[in-house]
Amino acid sequence: MNILFVCKYNRFRSRVAEAYFNQINKNKSLKTDEAGIFGGWYPLDPIQVKVAKKYGIKIEGKPQSLSYQKLKWADLIVISANDVPKRIFRETFVGKRKVLKWYIKDVKGKETKEKRTEKSIRQIIKKVNKLNKTLNS
Image 1 (tube, rainbow, N blue to C red):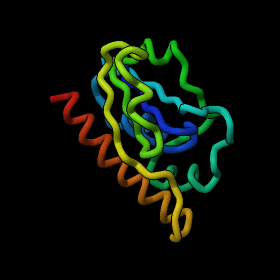
Image 2: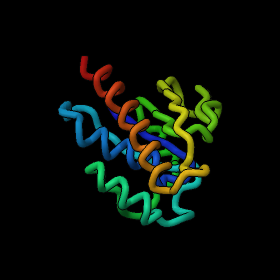
Image 3: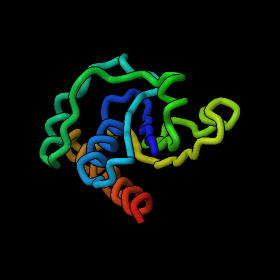
């Protein structure tokens, strides 16, 4: 099974989800990739990279854009963002692939960026743990 994690810019949420999934998944038949609807526009945020590293999650490299090839490759699309509409992935566009939507908010708000980033990472970890358990049961 091929799993594609998608968020808005591929700077944080989809990258953390994919990196953490690969860290905990023991089933080598499950392959992953990640992309952003508007990938490649902005570099990674150093604060988010630093906080993710504290959780043992390494995110690096240039953000990747969503492509037809990635959509065609994926058996399961996981939207790891609240600001990416599920309707983008209607059956006519991506075939009969399963699409999951996780409502993970972008790192914004009144708290410090570090606190907001940690909150998002904990939400992602919880969702990924559940997905991994479901796929491996």
